[in-house]
Image (cartoon, rainbow, N blue to C red; front, side, top):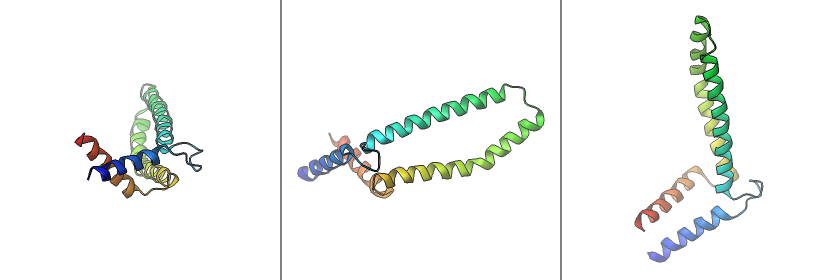
Length: 113
């Protein structure tokens, strides 16, 4: 059993460190880190813009319409986030299910240490 655990950890380590041409010759972990960083920067800018709008003295109509539009946009934005997640998985050439199985195996091994 020890050999199997070591083999899984080595394979996951190798897979996470190898360069992918589809990911601009970056390892999947680094690609994901860069992607998350850019997303958090985009979200921070969006949140600042929203705060400025809220503090800019909107009319009652604008304050009523804006949340309705945001609620209508929310499913689309969630769908786009899922699509981006799937694109990352596809670029790393691994299915979401397989990635979650690997992550579960690694976490299990880490807990056992």
